[in-house]
Each structure stands twice: as structure tokens, then as C-alpha cells.
Length: 363
Image 1: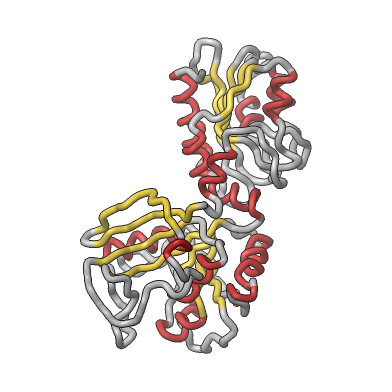
Image 2 (image 1 turned 120 degrees about the vertical axis):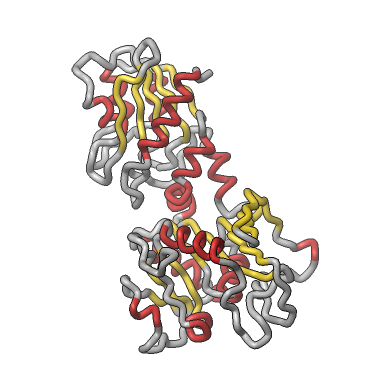
């Protein structure tokens, strides 16, 4: 069982992992503990082709200094040779006698480091702070296991489930605190998705902005779903990134194809907030991993529903949700929920605790 010092070291490893770039490769942190439980070195992965976190930490020690040490790593040490060598072999060669990692590597070729370490006589423990590590790597894990980006579907609604008044006006249902939260989450995404209906009706900029209206440093790539042309004077044509457009819809499998193409472009996090039809399509096709629902204490009535048909015809077909959190934002409430059975999130957490290979991933 992991000691208090090992718990503290894993928290440190999770913190320093976030110093690495978020992208095609996972953010990984490693902490080396001496025989007395004190930290003797730490490292993190700085991007493709650079030393992995464990090797980065080992490089800061003199030869032989890691002998008898414990390695605390947020992801199972890899067991393959890619652009760098296998971390499991590096730890064995350095004389590390115990390895504790949070979650298993899902790669067909990179997994198995835990097994290799045990075969060499190293004491190995898996699953320490697995939920925290899975949350950090959730989008990367989704790509590895499902072959598509992690998808968050967002909408704002009145208390009676409407997205707009009867005349179509919808700005603003929610207050400034909720809108600021949306922009912060946009900035954390790689791509933001809207339907052509929303583009034509609302002319959204699809940018991530600060409260004063200035653009935040990171901007998601705008993605439009639907065949109708985008007007030449549309606001999204002034977006910092050129928009991508996919003509397909959920009924024809177009959304899955669009996500596959986005994955090949390095997109790992998709933020969907393009209107009731697009949101419903992602849910109907079981492509949503997370839901963000902003609920304002107002009543609108009418037929402008926040969500269109999701394929439910009887109560037994209702799409159940696991609510992760409910957060007050000014007068509004933010519900964060995951579909159950989940598209990805709970499955990733369940598999994170075992040494189970899946699809290829290369740190």
C-alpha cells in the first residue's frame, strides 16, 4: 500500500505533469523518492521526441544515485522503443526498486511496462490517485481508446428547458458569470463546433473571450457542421483560425467521420455549442462524453427547446445521466454530467486501474 510520502509525491507528479504541452502526447510527471522518502529528483514530458518524464527525472541524478529509489509516475512507464527508449528499461537499469503509477498505459505497443518491471523484480503498485490522473489525461485517453476526440456538449437553457424566446431571441438567457465560464472552457478546447443553422441565425464569433471582450491567448479551431454555405460576411470568417466545415450530420454518420478527421489534425478536445439540433445529434449518435448545461432561473415557454430529438420515444429509452457536479454561477446553475452508460469517462476510469492494453499511444 502506498505511503503518505508516495501520495504526496503523486500529487506533485500530477502538478508538474501540467507543465508539459497538451497535445498528441500525454502530459506525464515523475518524482523519484530516496530510501528515506524524500524527493531526490523530478521530471516531466516536454513533448514528442523529448525524454519521457521518468528519464527526465533520472537525468538529474548522478550515476548510481537512483539505486534503491522509488519512482512515482502519473502514467505506467512505457515498454517500447519509439523516438525514445522504454522507460521501464531505464528504471530497471538505474536500480529503482519500487514503481508506483496512477493509470495504465492504453497503447498496444507502449503498454506492459508494469509487467516488465515486475519480471525484473521491481515492486510495482498501480492505481494511486487514478481518478485525478484520468481527469488530467481524459481527452488523450479518449483518443487512445475510442479513436476520436473527447467531446463536451454545452447548452444554456431557461428553467423550463427553452433555448430562446418564441421570436428566436436568445441573448442573454444566462448571466455574466455563466458566460465567463463558457469562454474559459472554450479556451481549454482544441475545436469548437456549431451547426450551419446557428451560424445563419445567430452569427456567432466562436471565439474565447475575456470579460472585456478581448481574445484569450488560446483560441479553439471553429468547426461548422452542415451543408449550407457560410455567408461571406459571417463573424466566424474573422476568427483567428480558418474554419473547417463538414457537410454530414448525425443521421448519415457524418459526425463520426468529422471527429475522425479532427483527430488526424491533432484535435483532442471538442467543445460543441452549436444549437439544439447539433447537440441532439451528438447525443443521439452516442458521441458525447460530457454535458455542460447552464440553467437560468427564467421561464420562456413556447417551442424553442434547448434540445431537439435524441431518439427517445418512450420513458424506458431515456438517456440517463450521472451528475458530476452542480455549481452556482451568479443566479444560474451549471450541471456537469456524463451519459450512462458512458461514452467514455467511466470506462476510462475503470480501465485505468489495470494493466490492460488497448490502442497505440506514444508519450
